[in-house]
Length: 160
Image (cartoon, rainbow, N blue to C red; front, side):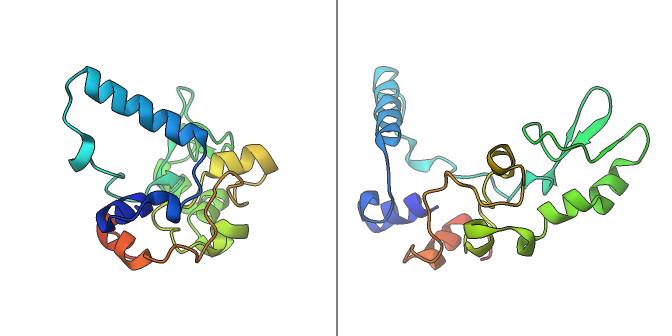
């Protein structure tokens, strides 16, 4: 949403976002694919899912054995649908409750004004620290530094 806001304002994204070589390589490759296949430019693409979903927050993973986890990438068992109803697991499991509680997030993720658009990767936080509530270490954003927060939320259709 930050990039879309900057594009809409005609501001080069580099002025407000720290981008690395990977971003430019992927962007160039996408432009090459679009050109080679005579595809229309992605000007009217959907820039994000229509609602916020993340590990244990509007999304849940159930294995073929009935084991429930917050998502397929977060290996924290929170119950089994063969033993407990999914509704009860989703509503009552302390791990799932904490994943939906913004005040439980730590570090920059807990401070970030874009929580309702992102909330970081709980799976990556868990893989790197052993705690799914820790900050998303690979996020380049520092809370409070984007000057067009209201405009980004207006584009998203989600309330801040």
